[in-house]
Length: 282
Image (cartoon, rainbow, N blue to C red; front, side, top):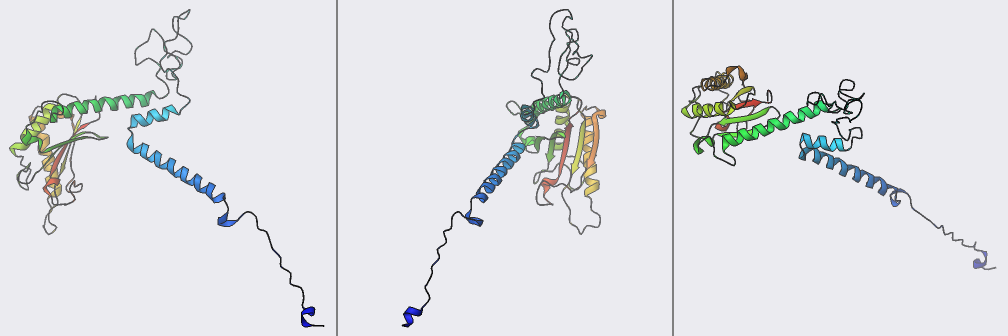
């Protein structure tokens, strides 16, 4: 018998593989799609928070709130009760379910569950309208300015959560105060008198903040705290001398060099005064 006849037969086994596992499957794609969708929704939320006002955000929230009544102020109806019902203000004062005809003033009408928030929004909108009018009167936006072009170079205005801020600042070679003192220049006296006239148009309370540039650290006595406070106090005096009611000034503060607006701590642009028309007593 030959060697070829004694050899064991060769068996080839082929295994058919169907489907996939691990990273070859499709389950990860579903999870990834869910993750991308969630991230897109998150970034849209962040964008909306940054791009909308408080009133607009409240409107968006109200849209998705099913408990808000369709009509917050209802006059009741005719008939035996003459417009009154068991849902009048005397029974359910702030649910938005009704309002009597005999007590139709805004203070007495049912205004809904969010009435306190609505009042805050109304007050905020009213203040911002007043602030815009004062800015126009001050800077002449859309009309004639109360200040000359020479004075306007030293002024910026902005509306913040605290109120309307009118900021005076030094320019190179044109300071608001005599060098390293709290003695106001003629320019500063004119600016303070002008702001006093504008602020006299409303009754809001006022705050005054003083800021200074930084000084070299080798000085034996750093004057920034005393200087910023003295300059703020000098502005308060100028406002009162210009006819502003002294009872309206609620705060005079010196911030030294702690809140610079210029990245260079010793820049003269950091020498500035802020007069704030506070969000109160509209």
